[in-house]
Image (spheres, rainbow, N blue to C red):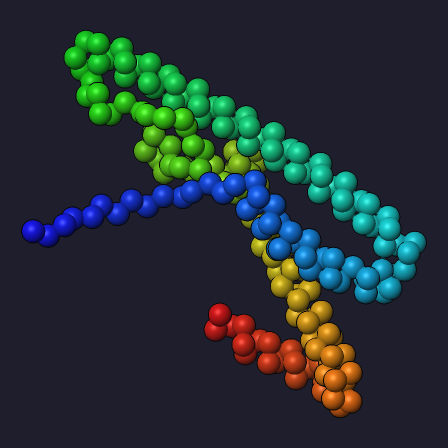
Length: 188
């Protein structure tokens, strides 16, 4: 006969190694590549204090975000424990199906058992922390990613011009490489 397959949509949490690699690839990579040029353009007197300030701000924000995540995860675990206790109480009186009881540890990356589909993500944490002003967190994430992309659009054509000049002795305009990058990357 025909075999039936059940499709289950899940959001899997990543490992610490995957998260570290993602942060390095998306944020630190372009910064390290462009850092020498940024220091040259800004000068040591501005670049070092700006780097120290941005690092301190990042570390403080990351610590606060981890604190919020831990608090929200504990809240979810407590709610799930209470629901399990209530289900056990109801099932002892014959009012609850055993299959409905939660099994295993609570995963904050999965939709909650309340059925509201809430997944504990950065925007969801911001919504819980800031309410209607959480849109600024989402905007900040979008601006950060835009900045990372712009760094590549500045850095890569400059390097391609230098490599082309050193290998062929001819100078190709930076704009030509930028246009080629745009046409190559937009379809991807």
